[in-house]
Amino acid sequence: MRTMNSVLLVEDFGPFRALVSSLLREKPDFEVVSEASDGLEAVRCAEELDPDLILMDIGLPGLNGIEAARRIRELAPRSRIVFLTGCARLRPQTTSWKRSIPRGRRSA
Image (cartoon, rainbow, N blue to C red; front, side, top):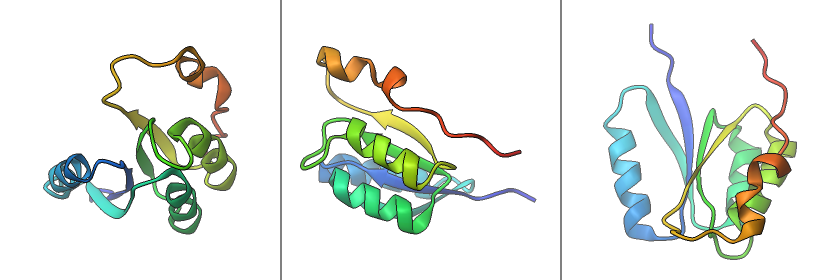
């Protein structure tokens, strides 16, 4: 029996979010449980839904993806976060995201 992975998709550019969402919906292992277009909405959805996977843009309005991920790590530590971005040139403070977002404990 296959396990369905719940996905929260966070992207502010609507056409790209729709494309990724439609591609994921074609895969039997993934279920897009919600979509968000800004960082604050992502934090609310993550806390409420506790998804298995969060696909998140870095350059989000309101609350950027790095800060949203920090908050989500506290509220939904089980969720895995993967950053998606079309940003060709990241600022130095965003390239250190790996050091700044603690990985919560993983349960078996």
